Image (tube, rainbow, N blue to C red; front, top):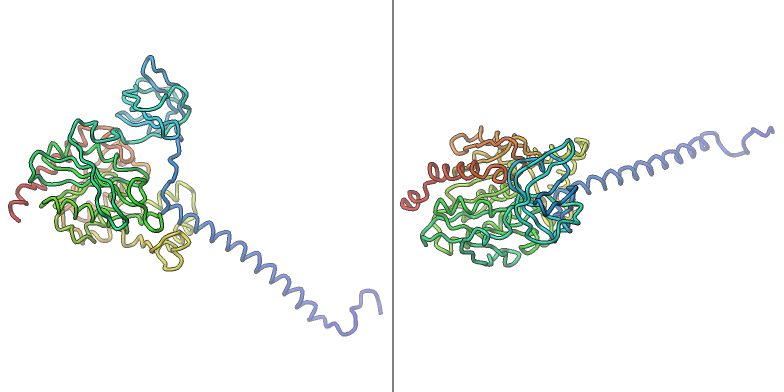
Length: 407
């Protein structure tokens, strides 16, 4: 027998089969590893969508602060170069300044006037966080403010109340967006006060002020509406007969779900939405494209969110079905007037869905389009424009005194 001859009793086909099984096993193992990696990535994307930011990152480079001249120079970006009034946090959130007019630009920087430094020493700050908030508490408006607790399913949620002089005044309930607090909504207090409204500035679960939910995750409106429902019940207990709800960004999605799900929505005579999430599919598509995520990843992540059992990979207590939150598809279920305020250069929540909702319900929806104002900064960019649109709509469309008298 030659050296190349196989040992007696070892069939050729068995050798081939063994080699094939080894190759198949290796392939299956590799596929399993690849599937696990892809599955983990998709689960991470799904978690990212519903997980509140525990730490607000300061991403804006601060080039220079001149306290003598009262100026701050920042890296130039679509946000920092906007005209108007804004907030700048620094020192890991311990410092806060308000900035105003742009007084100079270069190709890479923008210099703005400092209106006030409310906390901290900005001279050594190297990075900051840009924001649309301007006021930190309603008391800065020289109005009477009450601190109240609204009973919610997760416990008492702090709220601010600014009452009108008339005890029978209609109410506005203001609902902030994702990753911020009720302080975001203070900007709308003056216009509602001017229109004769009492105002409740609400907090809701997982915002760092109100109690957390069981899972500590966003429901993207599918759970948070319960806290706005609680706010409506609170103002109902105060004798409210007419309420306007106003929501910013994700707060818009929360308000819209409140309209559809709350028994107390009978009190609501109108809704104002600023830079709202009207359809989460459009938002996630835009963000996915910005992150260069494959379409299949976005689609599967959405399936993870809505599928029982799989939703737990995102850390959710209950599934979140984005199809239920698509208000363009559900436009025929709306039955109160809506004022939509959106900038076409929003940069985070595309305005297309707002346009689509207005087109779907021209009988109910008035769309006012801003230009160059970015996301949730319409008041900051042009407070006169913001106030005038809301006041005109309240006067022309809602007419709470007429509605209250007709009840």
